[in-house]
Structures are given as structure tokens and as C-alpha cells.
Length: 116
Image (tube, rainbow, N blue to C red; front, side, top):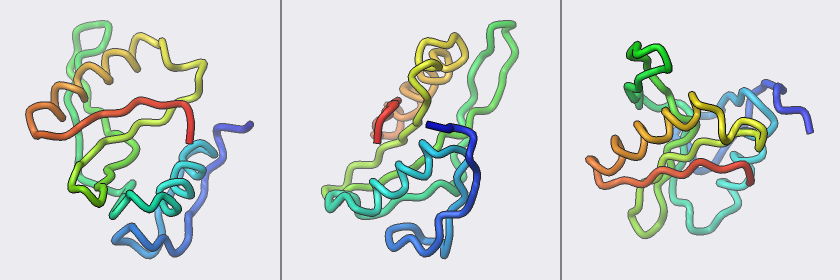
């Protein structure tokens, strides 16, 4: 499966926007999944979340997670989708750790997944 496909997801019903952009086929599939999931009340790729994290060289960077999802039960979850070959990458693991703490402080959850 190609993961570098980019494009527009047209007319989502659970996003506040008339379209959302995706940067990979995995993201496009996740959008389709979120649209079909009856437990998802809202989702968006275009959000204002930027999470600081420290790279391998000790520099502070900004991480913009893939999706902000709100479920019908009120839970808010940040979802990051990666190819299985990237799950153990040092930068992905550092971003995950920073995002988990960021979410914990805000009463949210973080999910790093390879599937849709």
C-alpha cells in the first residue's frame, strides 16, 4: 500500500470543514473509518494542536498530530497513524511520549496506530 499519496477528502460529515487534506493513504483510510464509526461524533485533521517534544539532539521541536477525535461519550483522543515500519523509530517514540503527557494534562487520550 502506498503511504505517500496526498489529496483531499471531500465533504466529510463529522469534520467542521468542507474538506480535509491527507498526507498518506493511511490518513485517507483513517478519515473514511472515522466517518463510518458511529461512536465518533467529530473529527478533524486541521486543528491547532502543536505539541513540543525534544529530538535526539536535545532540540525542542513542534509535533502536529494527525487527528483530533471526539467520541459520542465525550472522550477526546488524539490519533497518530504511522506505517508499521515507523512505529519503533526514535522520533516517533519521543513524539508519542510527549503527546501522551500533553494529553494526560488535558484529560485526553493518545493513540498511535498502524491500522484503520
